[in-house]
Length: 332
Ligand code: FAQ
Image 1 (cartoon, rainbow, N blue to C red):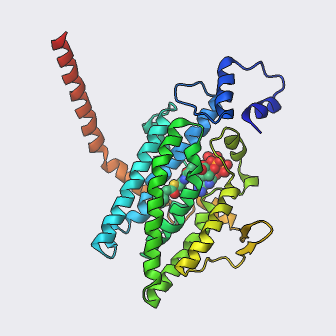
Image 2: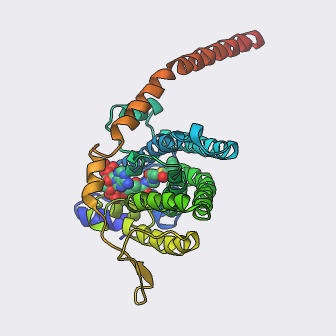
Image 3: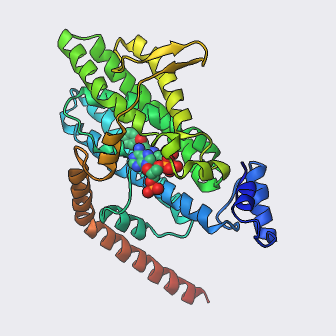
């Protein structure tokens, strides 16, 4: 159902649409981009701010599980690769905060929401990373899920978000391959390394599937976001796509996906898979995951430690402004 049809269904008494509303509906229906200067319904703006800021926070908090391994990576080369990956996640967070700012929210307001614990970020980053193999699982499964979810977002109806996603997806593909390669190396190694890889995949598989969000029947935002072409596929459709992608890759790796119900369904043309433990998902969202407290505490400490950088940047910008004004006065 299109957004125009949804609105008409909600209220048949609605006044005739304004020219701005009609133009917005045309942009959505013709798969064109809505840009920051275009008129947009308040609910569309709010949905985008919600999704983009949550996404940005996820990238920033998502630096921590891997940041934990930079000093302990098994070689200089592995350290350099991991450091570059974590820096990429920081960059993704910054593009996304910038995209959200075009909708009229300040970066400080978004930081406040994150630091005060009122904002959501992806459930997956509340799981701990006790072994080196977890760097492989994050790349293969977490970045893999992120790609499945985010490639369709490159076609998001809101221009700045869609464009940010193009670059992000290119980098995520590289991240997924580096994770796959870590696991492949371990699976070609000693029995102990193989066990480490399998044990890690056992822990990350189900949480990675939960990254796509609750089942469609429990997803309050999906229908609206799909009508507005923010989301192009439902949570369950993307989860299915991800499982279909994982099964052959797991065979190449030689790992077993920890779900005895996975089997090819000829009729559907997809792999069937078992029911996930959604109680665990809602527990993590409620702040009771393995690492929610430590993730937020670390973020707050990093924010406080960075106060002098923000102060220096403000002083520098003020001096540049003053120099520019003096120059303009001289020219005038
Ligand atoms: N975790 O109605 P829906 C990455 C919330 S980036 C926490 O289905 P929607 C890169 C949802 O917000 C990973 N909360 O919601 C990386 C909503 O709450 P609200 C992040 C979740 O928006 C890799 C409520 O549940 N990616 O991995 C989750 O239509 C490695 C109801 O849900 C994105 O953010 C969850 N998993 O669909 C970085 C992609 N799922 O706001 C470092 C963009 C749902 O009403 C290392 N976002 N919720 O209070 C999206 O595609 C969508 O927002 C969904 C959720 C699919 C996440």
